Structure formats: C-alpha cells, structure tokens
Amino acid sequence: MDNTGWRTWAEGASSGMGAGVAIFPYALFRYYRRLKLDDREVLLLMHLMSFKQVEMKEFPTLEDMQELIGGTTHAISLSLQKLMKDGFLSIDEEVDEDRDIQYERYNVSGLYEKLSICMANDAKNKLKQASVARESTATEEPESERNIFKIVEKEFGRPLSPMECETISGWLDQDQYPHDLILMALKEAVFAGKVHFRYIDRILLEWSRNRVKNTADAKAYTQKFRSSGRS
View 1 (cartoon, one colour):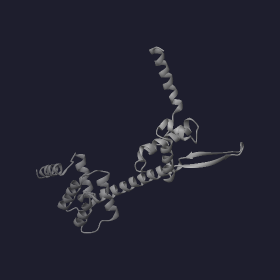
View 2 (cartoon, rainbow, N blue to C red):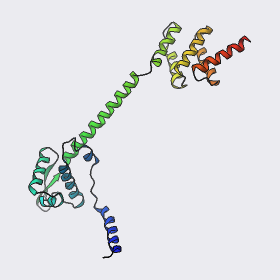
View 3 (tube, rainbow, N blue to C red):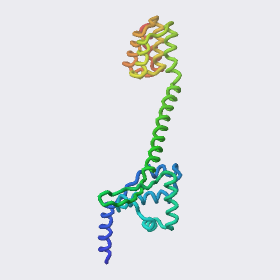
View 4 (cartoon, rainbow, N blue to C red):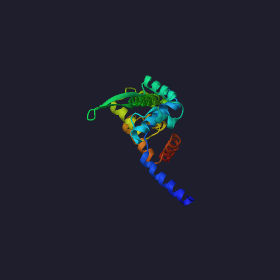
C-alpha cells in the first residue's frame, strides 16, 4: 500500500473511531486520588465501562481485561476483589426468564455514589466558603460606612428614624456619594444652622450638579460660593 493508500486508511479509521467512543465521568479523574484509587484501578474501571458501552460486554473475562491492561489474570483478579471490597464495584446476578439463563454483570454504581458524595461535599464547601466570605465582607465593611449613621445621629442629637436611615443608605448605595462628602454636607448643614435631611440632600444634589466629587472639590466650591456671596 502506498502513502496515499495508508493516508486514506488512516482517515477512515479516524472517522470510525467516533462510533466506538466510551464516555467516562470527569469526576472520576478529579476525585480518584481522594478516593484512594491507584492508576491501575482507575484504568480497570474505565475498561469495564468501555466493555459495556462499546462492546456490549457487561461481564468481560479476566483474559479480556488482561489483553488490554497487561499483567497477570491473578493481579487483575486481586484488583477486582479490592474494588468490590471497598464498595466501588459489585457483581449483579441476572436471570433471562425468556431463555432461562442466569448471567452476571459488573455494576459500578458504587463508584458513582462515591463520586457523587465527593461532588456534594465540594459543593457544600463552596457554599460554606461563599457564606464565610459574605460574612467577612460584612465584618470588614469600611469603618466610615458603619460610623456614618452614628455621626449623623450625634449631630442631630437623637436616634435616626427608619426613613432617615433609608435616606442615608440611598445616598451611599444609589447616589454613590462618598462617605466623606456626605459628612461634609452634614458639616455645612450644621454650619448653616439647618440640620435636617432635606437641606443635606439639597447640598449633595447641588454639588453633584456642579461635578463636586470629593471633599477637596466641596471645599473649593463652598469657598467660591461664600466669596461670591460676600462680594
């Protein structure tokens, strides 16, 4: 056969491989070490799956497996016994009532159950880590954000109402006003003798319209406003 012939044969073989594909769970590769399976045991389990999926053999002989895995049939038998002892593999006995035949087949549902437990534990740990992260974020919330309510209460000389707390939250979350800028507006309200929320909100809105984005801008704007007022 010339090179062209071999190339054609290879292309045909490559195309045909798609018809004999065995599917293995990714979890097997991800967790087999956690389950204390060695490489040979994993290979043996994969061959059992392949025999069933591709060759329709649910109970391949030791010789069938030896041909693919190598080693002795005794070593393969010991590996199978260990897998069954550890709960990864079992042998089901079935009866074909129509033909009155009893036969056996390998069952890897034990492996799937153990893999599912690993997946569930990982999912549980991820949720736990996410919860801890959220709690940590809340705990590590900037000191200024936690204290801004206390500072406003102190300047007002009384506890804030739920609506007033909601207003401050709106300044922070919706309007995205910096904490320092809100406190600066509070300071201006105290200076003007108009300590109420509508006046503070009016100051913040005025600053926003004039592109005042930080305390330095606010000081410059206020100084300019006061200078123009005196003149």
